[in-house]
Image (cartoon, rainbow over all chains, first blue to last red; front, side, top):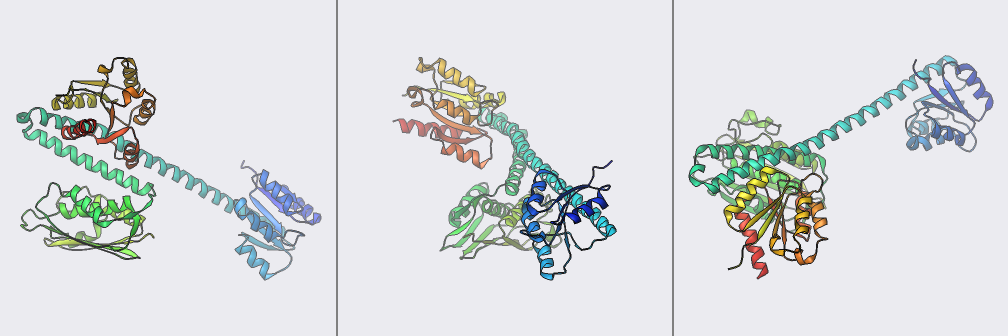
Length: 358
Length: 137
């Protein structure tokens, strides 16, 4: 047997309460109160499913009562009873009291009965939805924590492997020249790259990092130093127009620019004698406009709408399929925008705008 | 020439202890490496040798993620050791963490001279030892 439906009926006229009880006591568990104050006490102590209140009561009207409990007791479904068709009261009941149904006095048993049953279904649907949301939030939270922990756990032994490779190279020059050690190192670095991207992704969905003052000159030069190390033959043309302070989420900005700059460096043509990356940044009070252009391999037209999808890789498999996906996710978080234009074998241009957060 | 000192490794991973001890011995910067499998073991060693300063390390490479006593908990316990020892000893965190907060927290701690990323690089260690020696002169 399902537990009985708990109905609270508030009316200052005892006769109405008694009539209600007489009609419905077999179907429902009925609680009654003669004032809003008494009704509230019942709501505070019991899990009521449906609340019915008369509009015309001394001190507190039905609508005023519903309005009071909208935030403190949001779950019970609310039904307003009234003998007057007062349009203002009705509008208030809907807009402020969030009522489910409006019933005119004198009520018919059948109408009220159906109304209570429907109200209970609405109550249950609402509760179930709430439970589902809580469940999903919990699962999501657990998944996030799992990603965080597992990426830490995966990285520790990987870093040990990198240490062993280092050691071999230090200890025995000749032995370490064998191709195998270089292969192990390449694989370890690649695996590490994936783990680092996973952590970037995790941090991006989770944290709300503080807004900091950004100096684009410093940031861009730092990033180029990190990513251009093995590619000394690329020429960088950097033009940064920043006369006013720019405020943004430093972590996400670094993720976005880092991924785009490292792509511009990575996807160069091996045959190109004048490898070039051009970065233009202009900052105004509203936003920063950033263009990153390279004369590299370019993107095939049919791939253009997929490049921001996770694990999408182009024909040349340098990447993890995560860089642009993460950059786009990070941009979404800080309400930035990105567009891309590219010509295959000629080069690619990314244009991003990021709002100035102060 | 100055006598080579001792270095202490605190790390719960046997493999990392071995690799790092080997790298340290190849740099020829220290006369001895004291390997400890936990923060507790390291504190215990230090306390046992307080009366025998020549057995004590001048540099400690400290892991962050360790069961029971982690790197930061070790730092708290370390700060209570007599200054006669701590004044002559440096600590560098050595971790595979990518967690920004951990790195910042390490750099902000007055007891920590440097944050080093795993895998330990011989060149990084040499640089650090150089700086410490210069600071002493």
